Amino acid sequence: MSTYTLHYWPEIPGRGEYVRLAFEAAGEPYTDDTDVGALTKLVMSASVAGHPPHFAPPVLELASPASSAKRAKTREGQSAPEGSTQSVFISQTPAILAYLAPKLGLAGDVEGDSEEERELRRARVNQLVLTALDLSNETHDVHHPIASSLYYEDQKEEAKRRAEDFRKNRIPKFFQYFEEVLTSNPAKSHRLVGSTTTTADLVLFQVVDGLQYAFPRLLASFEKAGKYPALFEATKSVASEEKLKAYLASSRRRKYGMGLYRHYEELDGDA
Image (cartoon, rainbow, N blue to C red; front, side):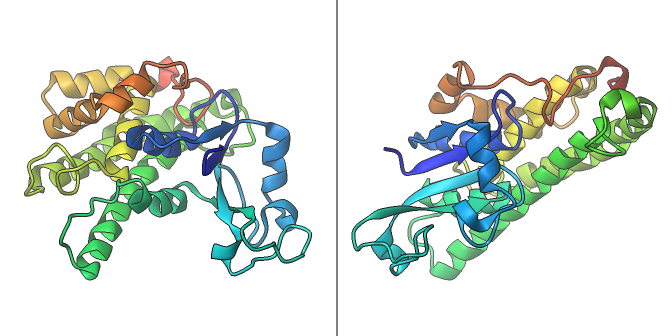
């Protein structure tokens, strides 16, 4: 039995993909649970997952020895026997990644660093994760600019207006920021922090890969014009890592379609 179970919607990569990439890059076994019935019981209620309740997936379940949780209460409210195993849960993509990063060797830790140096580097990695996820969220809001509860067709005209600004202003602003992060990294490693792959590199890879699916003309025009060379080189470098390369070519890698990254030809365009 694996220590980690990722609970997320079936079929789509979505926000769960950022967590999958961390497990895959580290070669860490995990269970990918797409049971919708089980998932819905984990959100908006403390009855199964405990306190605090979880607002939305992804939800990460950890098999935890009860003794390490100070004899925490079981779901029925009774003390767990010493040595038994129970589950604890974490939600919110960046919170999950911040928890996993040091455990999976994806926090940029350097041997010999002081505790303060480690904490500072981890905070900087998280800073970059959050920034990349901001771009991820904005990508979703392009095709659903009015309400996520409405169909795309119900807000198509608004989406066109949003997409124009997204292409001309928002993507270039984020890309230029990450270009600066990469080129100013003293390690000159095609990585955002230090010389090893972190969760920030994985999230940035996924965002750029998703944008290449959603806005292929735009991203191709950037590359053709020689814009953001460090950014594109970094994402290619991350994708070429042995474990990730195998995952990306496998059936476990979900296809884009109706999740965060959607391609609508009328929303795409040249730079």
